[in-house]
Length: 317
Image (tube, rainbow, N blue to C red):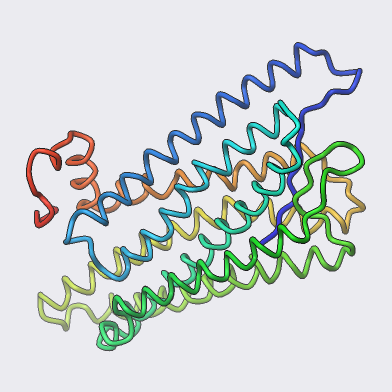
């Protein structure tokens, strides 16, 4: 999933130095704050799923894979982007390629993790009797392996294809030879997974509505299970929705950028890209808001309770 990102630090004569310095400081503050929030939030998710045995479920393992990708965005991609913006030293070309490769790898991993999460939810809601047979830990491990393998291959390919800085001293991460190559790449890397996720969750919504109408005919335990699965599906659908809202503006803009003869302002592309990266900090807040057991786990981790005794078998409310 190659991207078209640029350094927006403007050193032209018509921009005062004080303006450039101010923008650099503001971006450093914003980038640093974003990186810390991404790191803190996703660490809570990772520690919660790894530590508490109640959270050792196939769905949560897929969420763990997503959290790892988001965490690495906060540790690697965002800081590299700030360094490239302020343009301190001669390693800019190397950092440009490294950041581009990591960006492609981690964003692809996130997309495929979300795709597999939607598949998990499909079986949980639409085919509940076959869910434990179709989706188990072994199957989830294969899903995670496939998602990271595809993402790694895309990252390697993007690194081999990525050019050095352009003629106007910009760190260009995506510069295909033809306009059609942009549209095809974006459609394969983002369009197809987005369409699949939308179609799957639309199917899930239709089935969930039918279940809601027939829930009065179920026994109490069956109704509770169905309610829990639908709540989990709703929460993860929100995660997918936030992801699509965060990244769709960027991918649409770079698709139309060559078709519009490159008339979209570079600062607009840059802003959309930062919006996409900001998605990596949203998921932990969604989990904490909708899932009581994640709230309990976060509370025990933040207060340091898990370091005073073994609470791995605790029942999270």
